[in-house]
Length: 100
Image: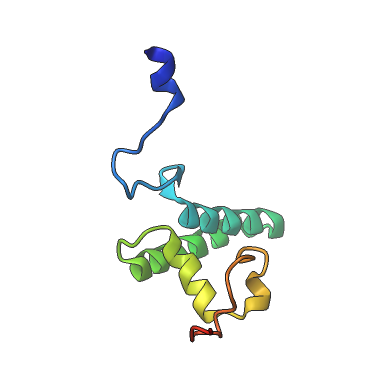
């Protein structure tokens, strides 16, 4: 029975999302990207302050919504050419009418 319980992992809730360092994925990536740029450009403290401001902005805009909120926002409002690697199997966001 122990082997079976290790084989399957179920989230506590249906909307439990993956986390990196206790933060949702998009927030952790944002902070890590700013910290990496800060280390590369020798502006680590300044970029951590920028990361904190961007983190607060994303948290305010999300208002408790899930991880896919940011991807949906990017899909609908940015040009398709920028996101072709992420959204390969979905139609262009400019085609908002069903075609038969």
